[in-house]
Image 1 (cartoon, rainbow, N blue to C red):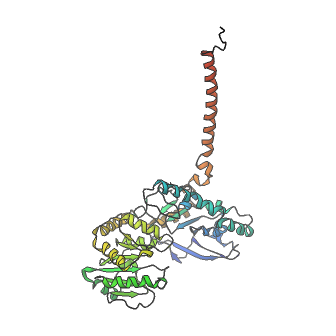
Image 2 (image 1 turned 90 degrees about the vertical axis):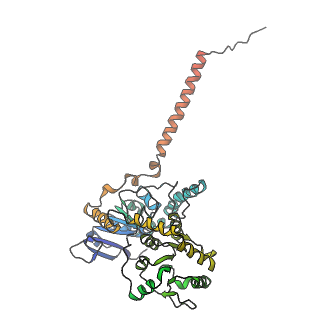
Image 3 (image 1 turned 135 degrees about the horizontal axis):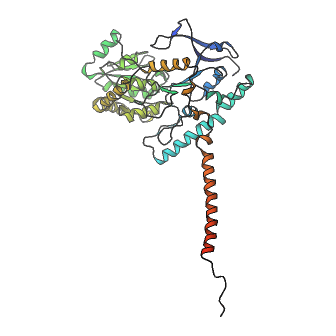
Length: 430
C-alpha cells in the first residue's frame, strides 16, 4: 500500500490528448499520480473501476473532495448498487457469487438473501476493507472513512442492458451502457474473407476462449476432443489458438489473433463456441450469432446461464465433455432455427435505443462535470444506515406502541367486565 497509487483522472482541458467518445470533446488523460500529490486538484473528474473485490478503494485518498465516478465493467453488482442507495431485491436479483434459475425457488431465495447480506458484511468487516483502511489511515490520518468516500461517487456506468440482462430498477446515477464496445462488423482481411465465404451454405464455426484463458492452458484431453469433433463437421472452423496444432483437419483454420466482432458479424458464421466472457457474450448477442458456451471461471457460468435463458445457445460443462457431446451440441445449434431466431430478437432489442451506449456514457460523464458533481443524481438512501433504510426503528416503535396499547386495552376490558358482570364471590350456605 505504501507505494504510488494508480488510477485514471479525466479533466477538461484546451488540449486534445484523447477522445472519450463520439461527441469529440477534448480530454486530458493522466494515468499515474504519486501518493500525496496535490496536482489532482486541477482535475474535474476521476474515474475508478468498481471491482467486485472492492480493490478500487485504494484510490479514494485521491478522489476525496474531488468529483469521481465508477465503471462496473462486469455488469450489475448488487453490492455496489446498495452503496449508491439502490438495494436490489433478492427475491429475483441474484447475488455476486451465483446465478439462480428464474423464478427463484424458496431455497434459492433463501441462499440469495444470504449472498446479499453476508458478502457486503464480509468485505466491510473481515475482507479487504479493514486492511486497506488501516494502511490508508496511517498515510492519511485526516481522511474520512473509505466507505464514506465511496458513497460520494456521482455516477456509475454499468456494463449491462435490459435487452441482454434482467430488467432491474436503476437510479439516475446508474447509467446502463451494456455492449458499449460493440459495433457493426467491418470488412475482413482478404484471406479470412475468402475462407469464410468459401465455406458455402454450410457456413463457419468460430471457436475462441477469449484472451485470459489461453489455448495452451487447455488440457490435452479436451483439446483432442475438439480436434476429433471438428473432423466430423461439414462446416469450416476458425479456431483462435496460441500455438501450432497437430492433427487438425483441413476444414480448420488456426490463428493466434482474430478480429472477433468482424467474424461474428459475417453472415456465413453460424455458431460461436465461447468461454462465455461478458464482452464475448455481448458481441455474440449484438451480432445475433448463436452460442455454444463453455464457461471456465468468474462470471462466465452466470453469462452462460443468460445465454440459456435468452434461448440463443446451449451450455456445456468441461467435466462432461466428449467428442459426441461437442459434435451434437454444435449440430443442435446449427440445425435448430430457434437459436438464430432468438438471437435476432435479442439483437433487434439491443440495437433499438434512442442513442448508443457510447453516446450515453459521454453525455452523463460530461453532465457530472458540467454540474460540479451533479449531487441531484444521488439518492438520499445512500446516507441511511441499514436500520434507517429498512425502517427497523420505526417498526420497533410500532410494535412497542401496539404492545402497550394491547396491554392498556386488556386492562380496561377486564375492568369493564368486572363492573358490568360482577361475580358472586359469596358461597351459599346450606
